[in-house]
Length: 347
Image (cartoon, rainbow, N blue to C red; front, side):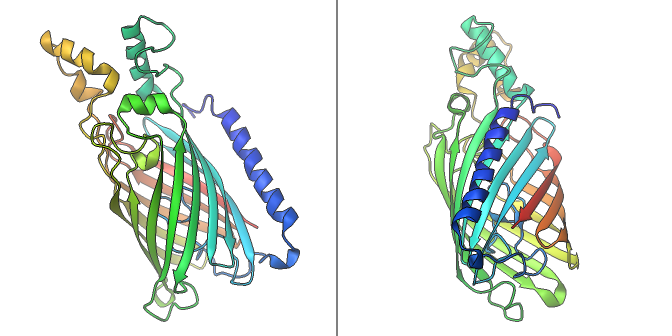
């Protein structure tokens, strides 16, 4: 669990927020408004994605969170842990589905970056003559944890993925996320344009019960770097949002077990970009014939994300997901292959 140091306190805060949300929902709504997990077929609400919405692990689907029907309200809480060679990600959140029409969600992500960005901080500290922090880039060694708040909303427009499975019409939904990244100094050092921004998406989801298969296609309008974990846009080319394609395919091995895969297209706003505070070092090393730092530590690149997953629902209100990840290059760290595990419980 290397890299989790320092994340305990933020997750206490997140747990308190989730508990408060559950308490507010349960305390203010009339009991007759609730659907107690009886409305949907196993796993047809998807699982909880890392941004907090209902869908796959990375891709938002057109389905609405919770097991509610059009006559009630249902919600879930979820937690995801992802492990990669140079990073670990912890995300916790809550999503509420209203009448199988509207979804509101919140997620809180903590990404301890470990030695990757500690190296940047140490180099900055050396340049500034400080043994504890950097006055050049604002990046402190041993304190480069990234924290991000994600607020989401989704509205089902047409179609019914579950009960209209005998037609070709998909369920269609529009949604949006507003993401706020708390590590401004690090993102500026990496060369991002903004630390907070919104994303919009259109999702089409179709479940074919005769062949036990679910298909999703999502187009996301965003300028995010690594889903926003390394900011939005570039400080040289601006914050230009573009459409990026995403998709999921899932097959039901049994009524409560699904396997599948996902693909998520990413941009490359920071591609080839040198870490801002090390430009002078690269120039100096090059003049001395000692170049190469710019192509090892400071040459950034972002890859598309892919995963293969298995989801298991021992009960209608509880699901577990495990996946293997191929995230390729993340900033200046190549070959980021790893895994994630996720749990969601609805009520």
